[in-house]
Length: 467
Length: 110
Image (cartoon, rainbow over all chains, first blue to last red; front, side):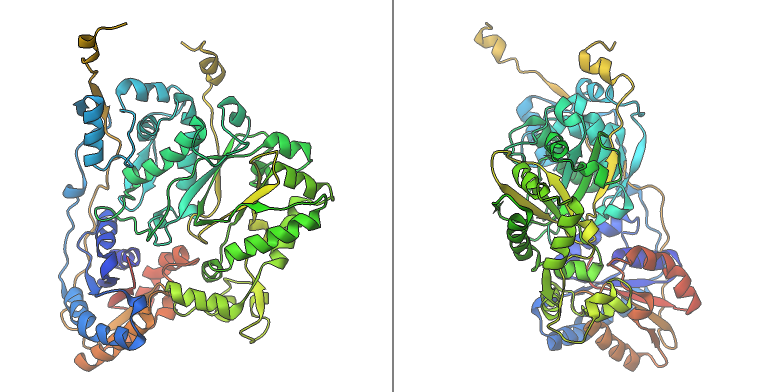
């Protein structure tokens, strides 16, 4: 809500933001990143969602009114940015030490995720920069809440630290390009659900750079999958500022850890005559593409058997329905939902053998996954969306009319918003009949894709012939 | 094979900075209002955390303290957090101007 206040202030209208106690630190960091550290705040003491409506009203009167009056009376304050602008140049050596001393320093400065990092030296960073034709100082964008610049240079620095190989650099840049897409809403990555971005890789680079797309695809263990996944979380800490409390602004209540890269088994996709995930995202089959989306929960492993589509789809619908119903209120509140279904190659082949396409799967699940309207609204209330009405959402144009076909609170409505927003990736153990669903956090971390740009000298660099 | 003395000569690493340049420039906060009597207050809400109850009570209390104070309800501005956040915040300055809003209360969260 600080962002709304900042808009008002820039329009010449004084503001006060009401912030509950547990969010005060996050508010301060966001305000600083917005360039307005002096934004007025009225602190609501405690946790609003465990207070009764009567208590909320009473606290508003006794704890908020006076700070609001005082905050609105505050005279114009020029926020000096000097404190936010640390004069460090990208090429400065910020620390010299042994490996152990480097680890201690980086952990003390909160420049590490808690695991040992590879020291980012000039030589290692320059090795990464050889794998892009983009200028090192190019500013890719600005990442909130710290509002620091994302540059080609600091992508390389964090890539080194995460244990990536230099040849992963084009993928790292594509990942950062993707999260800078405003549709992704990266600024909400510190929200309390604690969602984590998931990178999906498509294209020939999977094989060229030895990404795992088979058994154990989402397990730590393959350098490419693991280090690129780690890179993104490191980058979120260091450049965006999403560090956990008490010093950071990441409010993930329980949250989770980074995902390794999900690579598609494109040979299996071609074998059953479907198009790869990259083509679903609007690129040509065979393009090197990264796709990033949020993941807030993962289904259990789903085993489905049989030699026909119906046999598999029935189980998939039951399992995914169980996984999505508790959180789909967010989709209904925000009007966005991008679940991702990872089908084992054998499962996909069995479904395809019945003549089913990916769109058939999407339509089937859209029609089968339902929830009572009243239940979605009730779950929303518990999460803090205290006035969700699907009927009102339809009136606002956020949901389509069939979400309010009657006034019956127990009418069944779709869990998903649009069938075409269900992603389908073929990956995992080709020798087992297992699938999993990755559930995104509604409008936070919407699915976005970016093409991987290889340097002109890619082939020479890969063969060791580049000068 | 190296001898043990050589092994204790650990390399020293010269490390680069993993962060990026922070924000530059400065924004001037709006001038404050010392007396809300007769002023118009806009209510911004993210549709979260019982903010409608807070705003309702605040409205009651301010109306008692400041004669003639007026309010523009949150529904006029729209959800400041959800699917329409970007659009709603983009049009916020124009709406504030059009409705001659003097101050805003924004809630709830960070």
